Length: 110
Image 1 (tube, rainbow, N blue to C red):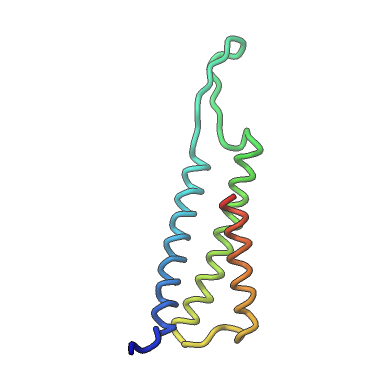
Image 2 (image 1 turned 45 degrees about the horizontal axis):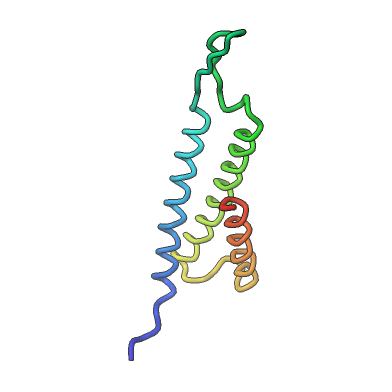
């Protein structure tokens, strides 16, 4: 019978996924804030449009920044867990970690 999986391996995989998430959010924020477009109108001619002209894009930018902060916090806690082998705050923060990931998923994937 195989031995049970090590928690260090799953924590290391979690760390890699969190770093990948952080990088993707940074790329998303850069693309969102630097994107511009040009619209032509008979009355105004050519108009340059930036992300700040639309409330939905500003909301998306704010959601991305919140995601960055949350991912950075979770990455720091995962680094602590991988380096020491103990969770920061013991078992009490496991629930915050679990439900935080659920809220994060629901907020950004619906």
